Image (cartoon, rainbow, N blue to C red):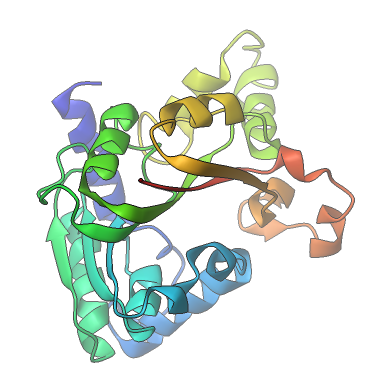
Length: 258
């Protein structure tokens, strides 16, 4: 992807920062932020299981791709020293306003995951939920994350899973049912899911990408998005208990820099 493609990614998230679609309240109000948080908690209640917000009290954390700041605020409320960066100025502005609205301190920057403006060995935790599959050079972004993680520091990163029900839904909709049965899932994701160039990975690919980290854990998480039957409409959660977890849309990667 070219620099122009990266601009297209920025413009996509500037138009609608992640998690802010279909919010009825005026942007930037407390009601708006509460609605964004409630929507997130309904769809992804398991986030805290991985983020372990309270664990990072008194520690320096960086969120790479903060969106509207939903998780960033939870880290700040738990007592972490928070910094965030986002390619989208609109998203960064919202996240900064959100911290201020809840009387929390933090530093939110506009910037690029592939060129992080921080010293090496600076943060105790690098957190990035559903972001790095949108940047053109994901491998470079992961190298940057390794560089700025302190020795002994940790990562918690979510990427999309190629062998998932969401990927199957997309293939059916934009491949098979569109009379393009030989269209690759890579092309479909890049052109039809979220920002231009979106990617998804296998577990083996993720393990290779993060091989510099020790104690690597890759958890496949079934999500409501895997149970979606139309836009913003989902099957009951109990249906998910009937589906093997390894078809989940989220890959959650955790590890440590020694």
